[in-house]
Image (tube, rainbow, N blue to C red; front, side, top):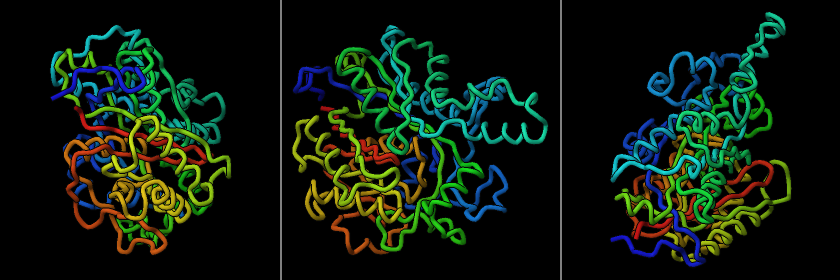
Length: 422
């Protein structure tokens, strides 16, 4: 039974989550995605999109069986980078999911907004065209390079395809981008600027240069001989993340309008925190101080106590410093082993700008189904951590709010709280 009030504790419009879409290494539809997360089976394997033989790190988590033709024409595909196609596909599926229950969304296009998190953008196209210039000269560089590589190409494509003319914004806060995008999209509705909004994230930067660069900075796991065991969030033997690609999207609606059209409501965006470490360009602040403050901001925004959180979908990258900082932050806010914590990156790898959005989809599904997927490859929680990490099998949880964290290079922190529909 949905309660009647359509305003929150601060008099802002409540934000309903009515559609979910995902393109990920774990699957390109919600059922497959959820099943793979609960299997605890990693998606990491040798890279197939290009020959990685000359690279030190040759593994990644690619989106499998992606049918580009189901979303764009061959002509359109030639003029779009993979990141934009993945992003549009997730957004289109999320909108279809929202429209599958109740009467279809019929909002004024100028009242429909799009905010997309994209950390790097069209790097695949950029690298390919640099190769063209070196081999064939500047006159052979594609005239579509700029619109294909620009970070805002993904929300621009969604706007063009949907005909939505409201706010259309790209967020580039590295690995926090997807979560920032969802929180900022929720704020469009909360403060009356939009009636419908897509909060989403997309990334496809698995290229020779990117893999080499992340490898050179020792961010990637060196377990290339055993890809499925490489990503190990919160494990004492973790040594870096596995690069992934994908996209996730949430359709957000003004609560009263969603109820009026008979929409199926997965839950509600109730809290959003964002801040900056102001410490180091890649390393988190000592003791997870910035992350802890960000989580507190989200709790304050939601006007709930820490014990109202039923589970945490952690950023959990499998890197030594970031997992340690997040573990300390979660313990500071919630207390030792006080809340179930999981990281889906052991299964999907690290999706960079898409990570927060795909993990938000996972958090919403966990909350709605009252189940938390296991953290893959967790043999032994780092003894320095006082965390209750879900591992080995899916865990049943009571109906409660969920927290999804994302922390990015540059010191960007973002935390999102979703609540069951009531």
